[in-house]
Image 1 (cartoon, rainbow, N blue to C red):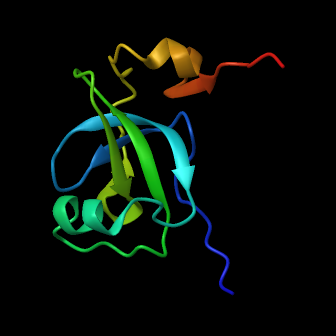
Image 2: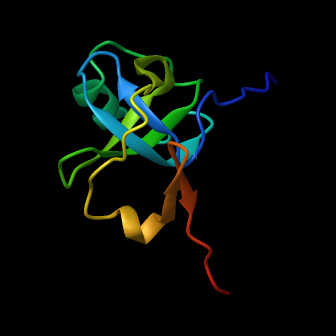
Image 3: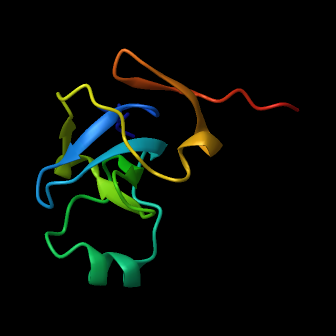
Amino acid sequence: METVTAKFAVGQVVHHRLFNYRGVIVDVDPVFRGSDEWYEKMAPSRPPKRRPWYKVLMHGTDNQTYVAERNLEPDASGDPVHHPDLDAYFSQFVDGVYILRQRGN
């Protein structure tokens, strides 16, 4: 079986190539983990299911999206993301990257 390495990491700020929004990655799935119904409705460009997919908090909204790797690129602005759920995931923003909040047992 082929091993797939994700290009992006939790805490990284990214830009969506097609829909021109910025966001921060909060989770990475090595392959698509959604339903076939969701994929048919929400992924009309049919990105590969056997490549990484990312949960992303969208800048300036309260939305979270699920995005195929091929639709993302690194965000070069260095600017923070504004989202109401940031504090649930991250403790700080350092050098353009969010630091994952440490969870207790």
